[in-house]
Amino acid sequence: MKIKKQSFGTLPDGAEVALYTLVNAQGMRATITTYGGAVVSLTAPDRAGTYADVVLGFDALEGYLGLNPFFGCLVGRFGNRIAHGKFTLDGVAYTLAQNDGDNHLHGGVKGFDKRLWAARAFEVADGPALELTYTSADGEEGYPGALSVTVVYTLTDANALRLEYTATTDKPTIVNLTNHSYFNLSAGAAETILDHVLMLNADRFTPVDGTLIPTGELRPVAGTLLDFRAPTPIGTRINADDAQLKFAGGYDHNWIVNGAPGALRLAARVAEPTSGRVMEVYTTEPAIQFYAGNFLPPTLPGKGGAVYHWRGGFCLETQHYPDSPNKPSFPTTVLRPGETYRTTTEYRFGAE
Image 1 (cartoon, rainbow, N blue to C red):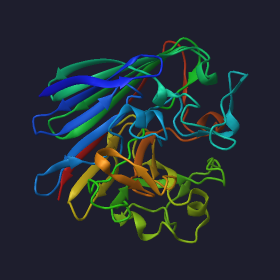
Image 2 (image 1 turned 120 degrees about the vertical axis):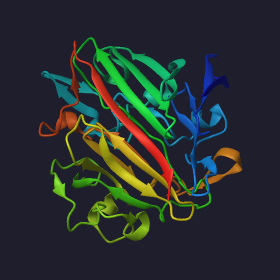
Image 3 (image 1 turned 60 degrees about the vertical axis):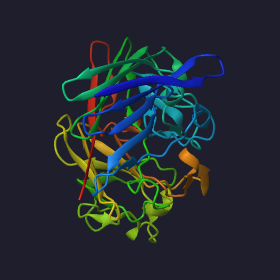
Image 4 (image 1 turned 135 degrees about the vertical axis):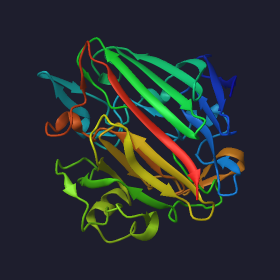
């Protein structure tokens, strides 16, 4: 097991940004930066045992400071969308930035993806780990309460990247943390992810309106084009004449993971047929957002001279439902003083 720290550059205010490389007993590598807590690279084995990078990102800090579609980052305080950037908690109305049309997205103008996190590297029994901490001040981006957040990345010797999130607050607030890594299990051999075969362990999803805000309905996937209970190539139905797909330009929806929230259980499985790489997502969260890169630009310079394309990566963001603060029927995202927010997600890699 190995942990290496190096400089990843400086922010405009002169603050130093670090890059940590974790190496497990199998030779798998994860590099994570303290800017936004972003996973910059992550290697996984193909069927021949060859490790290659399977996440989208940039070689240098400047890429993350520029046109960055949330590559690899930690998202908060509230991942996904809040309608009209407004919510009410304990009778008090709060207004957030409208940074996605009329809606609030991924924590606002300067969410957790644009913050510098403190870091501590260490080793645990099953692999190297990196602890990132950040305290979001009361009123930051319009959210109430000072929120203290800790995220621990562990690269296990079983070739899994585990994320353990905890948070506490000094005032009632809302919290919905996730990671926004974009995956391409072909390791860049394919320009799109449309041939990847996806299974989602979900019998229901939350349909959206034209601004991608959930309507409040919990709709069965049976008989819809969002049924991934049987493994299906992502591209098979993505361009179909369907209102839900047209609203999002493809898949960008929240699926309700089968099983009891709080228990670590299988949420998704993705296989890339050419390389044989397989990724399984396990989570304690109630839901998962599958996003097929519909809003990626046609070309975007990436790592190692690569050019990323529209639908060149997919995200599987474990989470609570979007717009939960405005949907009393959805699982609550309220965190109160004396409580601890805890969630765990694992991305497990192998080959077939």
